[in-house]
Length: 117
Image (cartoon, rainbow, N blue to C red; front, side):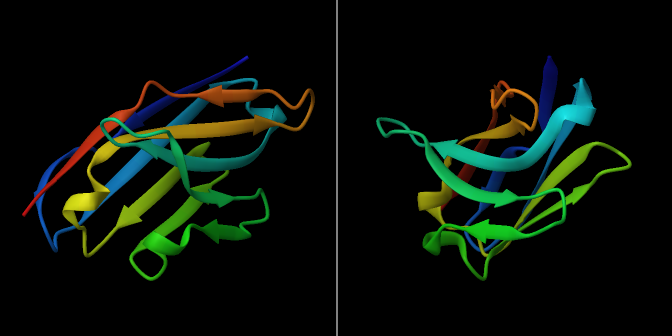
């Protein structure tokens, strides 16, 4: 089992920045790719960014050039640096970890990001 705890959400004005963190615990040896997803009110959860153990990254087009995902394998933590935030970035952001052992997905409880115009 893997436990994920997100932090760093909050209220920010458009154009501002926030840094989300996700700390993993438990069977951390099994963690492969990690990522961030978000779910805006009334919408489906969507992928934001992913990062592999070797730090290869992927970003959805809407955040390219504004968000940066990174991970510290020694601290078992993944980060999402969000710059030039827009009101449409408002959502609950969830951390995800995929197991290399059994393919399971693990999720955090989410952290709310609100961007005011």
